[in-house]
Amino acid sequence: MKRFLTRIPLISRRIAVFGMLAALAVPTALALPTALRADAPLRIVATTGMIADAARQIGGDLVQVKGLMGPGVDPHSYRQTRTDIVAMTRADLVLWHGLYLEAQMEDFFHDLARKRNVVAVAEVLTRDQLRGHDSYADKFDPHVWMTPVLWKDVVGEVQRALTKARPESAEIFAANTLRLQGELDRLAAYAATSMALVPQGNRVLLTAHDAFGYYGDSFGIEVLGIQGISTESEAGLNRIGTLVDLLVKRRITAVFVESSVSDRSIRAVIEGAAAKGHALRIGGELFSDAMGQDGTYEGTYVGMIDHNITVIASALGADVPARGMDDKLSAGF
Ligand SMILES: [Zn+2]
Image 1: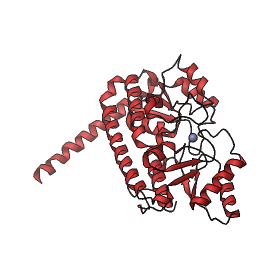
Image 2 (image 1 turned 45 degrees about the horizontal axis):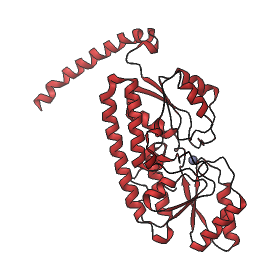
Image 3 (image 1 turned 135 degrees about the vertical axis):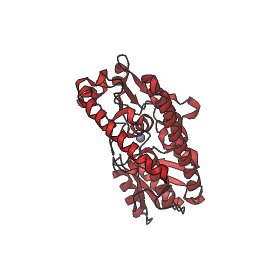
Image 4 (image 1 turned 90 degrees about the vertical axis):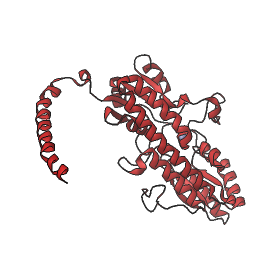
């Protein structure tokens, strides 16, 4: 107790001195252009919310991250705006996904890479980790964030890119990456436990586009997308008819909408099933290619995937915690 009391004046003195130093430092800091300050945050632009989240988690206070594609934005069809171009040409580091996810921006990134520090982070994955693409023989399914195990490798590539751009902060980036990858291990374990509880007859996941292939492979669930891997083509009536027959025959009762894709085709499937006397309901809204609202738990990578796991497992008949892995999901999805 005595020791504690004697420390108080010392702490107050330190606060006072620190306050004075901080006050003195302000004019100097303002007078210098940001780029000349050694402690200026590394300016990063990232395409998807998932990559922006990884950069923020790893970089902490040492980075300033701008994500181009917000909640509900479809990366397959997104084109860079004038504001995006300005931000990317001013950035210290530009992170994009690659694997033909940002199909409309590929040429732009290849050009930009000649002048700026640009990294396609998902292209670190090897051929044997990737699934094929349904429309292109020479391309892969880009939706690798759907399983935390693959995302860990992508997070490792984000760490390498940050470290190369700011080697003096390597230790901090390494510690933050380790912490994030530990969270991803925990998320992977939650996914495996939850999905194992889905009864055998219900193991079908039908969504608007084919974003859940890696998820299905990891957890032994059949995945059907009304549209293909990309969202570019409209679903045909034949495809909808085939899916309706399959759902009726298998007595599947829940299908899912996605936050970044129109729900029109899913509604057509529900109506088609109703016409055959089979009641289908929407099992919930999944975050396929974009995260939830900024500032919410679902607006982080871990929250987005926790939401998907919990909504899918629960709608398909598993008894999982309603508010997810850490009791953080918004109630009533
Ligand atoms: Zn997609």
